[in-house]
Structures are given as structure tokens and as C-alpha cells.
Amino acid sequence: MPKNVVMNRIGPFFLTIRRALVLVWQSGPTLTIASIAVRVIQGLLPLVVLYLTKLLIDAVTEGLKNPPDESSLAGVTAILAGLAGAAAVSAGFSAVAGLISKIQAQVVTDHMYACLQAKSVEVDLEYYENARYQDTLHRAQQEAPYRPTAILNALLQLGQNAVSLLTMGALLWWLHWGVLPILILTAVPYFVVRLQQSNQLYAWERERTPLQRKAWYVNMLLTQVGAAKEIRLFDFGPRLRQWFQDIRSMLRRERIALERRWAIMSLMAQVIGVAGVFGIYSFVAVRTLQGQFTLGDLVICFQAVQRASGFLEGLGQSVSSLYESNLFLTTLDEFLGVQSRLSKAAHPKEFPPSIAQGIIFDHVSFQYPHEARVAIRDFTFSIKAGEHVAFVGANGAGKTTLVKLLCRLYDPSGGRIMIDGTDLRDFPIADVRGAVSGIFQDFVKFQLSAKDNIALGIRSLDVDHFTLTQAAKQAGVHKAIERLPKGYESLLGKLFDGGSELSIGEWQKVALARAILRDSQILILDEPTSAMDAKAEAELFERFHELAKGRTAILISHRLSTVKMVDRIFVVDQGHIVEQGTHDELMRQHGLYASLFLTQAQHYQ
Image 1 (cartoon, one colour):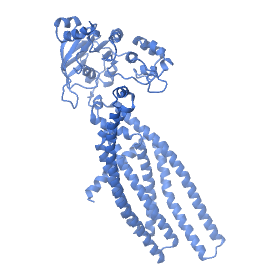
Image 2 (cartoon, rainbow, N blue to C red):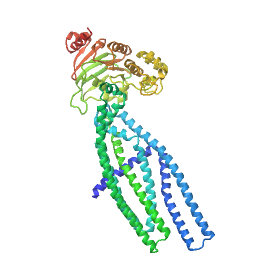
Image 3 (cartoon, rainbow, N blue to C red):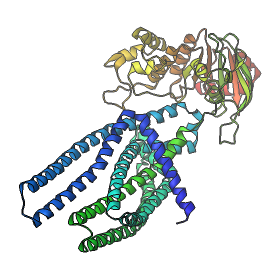
Image 4 (spheres, rainbow, N blue to C red):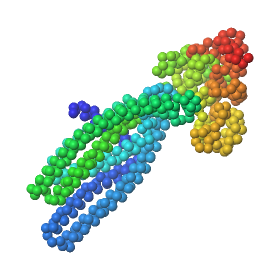
């Protein structure tokens, strides 16, 4: 094999071991030290057993030559006691090692979940709208439940096998220096085959991630509540099942082909290893017949070669497992290495405790990453402090995009957004988001208790019941919650046993209560009422206006009848603001707003 190929494989392997060691150490240093200590002792015990076995065989051989006496019997008894003691110690340490391994596996897995979740919360919103990022996240999440345990077990077994192999190697070198090199050379093909398998598995898994994620998505459609109604109504369950089976069949055929090829290569490597072992056996047997080795030397050499061969195979499996884990660790590094594209001010300014002047969009343009279409272009407008405004227009006009920019979920591609004359990018991101609250079109129905649903609106882990119920009363959902079996402690939704489902309007009021509890300076209502009837929507908007008194409020709706009460209306069309003014002013202009309003109004006449 070319030297550069070998180096290309050895380099990533040592990087994998280093990353795995750091990962295990960070999760629990005390457990790691205990594991290492126990495994070192377990690695040394085989040498003790083999040496005592040699002494026992030599003592018995000597006793067969001469009549046994009390001293020889006492010596044999002492050796047997030593072997029994070594066996008892080995059993005890195996039990301790197993317990530590199971405890540490749980700790490492929890540590991995914590790392993934922390980064998932930290990354920008744009990464969740990027297919390549979703592939990376999918690989990390798919491996997280079991890969850390595999890494841990492989590392511990690698360490134990390495210690045992070193002791067996020293023993074989003491018997004859030529035995060890032959044993190592015959084991090299097995190592190469295992590393080659790991490389091919890594490449296949990475190449097939999009297809595996598609299979996962189809399975989710078939097994979760989101698509259950449509699947039954349109009866496309069989079609989805067929899609899933087609994808899985393709993946299965490819994986079986790989496994078949690996089995043949492994068999060839093992044949070479067996030939080397029996060659050593023949050499030692001949040396014993020539009188150069004792019978004890013959037995201990046979056992040492057998054990060393087993340790080499175990070492190869551990190396292979760690090398395979490079798939997870590399993906993890790639995922944890994702950096925010949102700029951070070198000297951040303090966010105003009370907005005095208002919000200004100054020639703001924005284009979503990996999209050719410009979402908004040259948005220029201002919102006074405490003013209530509405943005209306067709779907895809750019209304929601400007809300994302105001919340600093994205930064503008061009222009700037200012609050009280200061660029939004000069404030800490957390302070900007802390000043904004509201309900979005795709608001989440958290399958938690009513209390927790509302309390998620603030960072504090503890909120008093009075404050909580006040927010619920202001949102108009208090009575609905009180009617639930356990009141505010009742689970909402049907995902968990004992949960109570709410109507869409009640869910939206829960979301509104969550926004009210936050007590932010800017309130946003971003088309959350698309599933509500006109009357319920009007009631929600009226309630929202009452709650937003004294605060800046932004409403986004495609039902123009509900936004008549705001101070100003902005009409958005194809990424541009084409009109602005009060309802009456816009109606007098006979422009796009008037046309849209009259078109909707005729359906109610």
C-alpha cells in the first residue's frame, strides 16, 4: 500500500481518538479516570494468570519427575490459590468496569444531547431553511443516541486491549524475539481491511444522507399526527408507504453489497492471520522438542499467542469502531462549528429602556441565502413610538420578512434598520429580541401544561400564579383554562396521555397570553388567524389593540377588514411598499389597497 495512503488513513484515526477522548473527558472527568484505572488493571491480569499457569505446569512437570513432598505440594497449592485469587479479582473488576461503563455511557449521551441542543438554539434561523444544514443536523441527531456509547466502549476496550497486548508482547519477546514481529505482520491485513470498511461506510453514509432524510420524512408523515387527516381523506397512505419502501430497498441493496464485499475481504485477512498463528505454533513446538523450551514455556507461548491474536483482533475492532465514529465526530465538529452570520458589534450600545423616537427602515433590501429572488427591495418607512401600523398585501409580498429582520432573525442585505436613531446591529441581539413579542402565523402549540405554555414567554423559571392568570385574562383564555380538568396544570394537546385539546382560537389566545406576559415594547401579530373565522379574527385584533396601548404594534394580515383601526397601513407588493396611509386615505387613492379591499368586501355583500 502506498505510504501516502497509509498516512491519509492514520492521520484521521488519531484525530478521531483525540476528539473522542476530549468528548469523554468533558462529560465526566472522575468517571473517565476510574474507567482508565480499572481497564489498566484488567489489561494486566492476563499476564499474571499466564505467569502463574507457567509456574503451575513447571511445578507439576517437576513433581512428575520426582516423588512429591510437602514443599512441592505446598508450592502447587499456593500457585492454585494465586490463580483462584486472580480469577476472583478479574470477576470483581469486570463487574465494576461494566457498571462504570453503563453509567458513563448515560453521562456521555446526555452531554452530547446538551451540545447538540445548545448549538441548535444558537444557530441563525437561516440554517433551518437550508437543506445542506438540515443534512448535517440530521446526521448529528441520528447518531447521537448510540454513537457516544460506541465511542466510549471502543475507547475503553482499545485501552484494555492495548495494555494486554503490550504485556503479551513483552512475554512473547522474552520467549523469542521473532514471534512478535510475525504475529504483528500477519495482523496488518486485518487492520487495513477494517479501516477500508470504515472509509467506505463513512463515504456511503454521507452520500446517502439526503435519501435517508427523505425516508425519515415520509415515515414521519405516515406515523405522526400532522398529516393524518389528509392521508385518510385522500387515501395516499399506500403511495407514501411505497415511496418509503422504494427508498429503503435502494439503501438496503447498497448496504448489503458493501457488507458482502467486506465479508470476503475479512475472510482473506483472517486466513492470513490464522496461517501466521499456526506457523508460530509449529516453530515453538519444534523448539520444545529440541529441548530449548520447557513444557511450561510451550503452554504459555501457545496461550500468549492465542490471547495476543485475540487482543489484536479486538484492537482492530476498536480501531474500526472509532474510525467509523469519525462519521459522527466529523459531522458533530461540522455542526458545532457553524457560526452565526449575524454581525456582533465590537462595542454594543445599550438598548433604550423605552423607545422614544421609533423604528426606521432605511432603504432596506433582503435576499434569502441560496435564493435568486429578492424578498424585499428598498423598504423605506418609519413607525413612531407607540404607533399601531399594519402591513397588507398578497402572500409572498415580503410582509413576514420585514418582521424577521426587525427581530434580528436575519440582517438586511442592504440598508439599515434603526431604533431611536441607532442601527439595530449595534445592540446586543438578545436585547433586540427581548424588546419584541407577538404571535406568528406558524405559532407553536406546545404540548405542555397551560401554565408552562404561558410561562415560556419570559426567561424566569418561576412566575407567580397571579401574574400568569392576569396575562391569561387579558388574552381572553382564562375561563377556557379554568374549565380544564386540572386548570393551569392541565396538559394541552393530545401528544401525551391525559392532554386536553383546545380550539384553534383558544390556542391562539394562549399564544397571545405568552406574548403579553413578556411585556415587550414592540408587539407583532403576524397573520396568526388564517384558520379563524372573520368574527373571531376581529375579536382577536380588537383585543390585541387594547393590550398594545402605549406600545408599538405591528399587524400583518391579508383580511383588510380587520386592519381599519390602525394608525397607518402599508401596502406591500412584490417586495416593494407601494402605498401607505390610513384606511380612508388609501380608499380615496383608488389604488391597490382599495382594489383589494373592495374585492374582499364583495364576498360579504
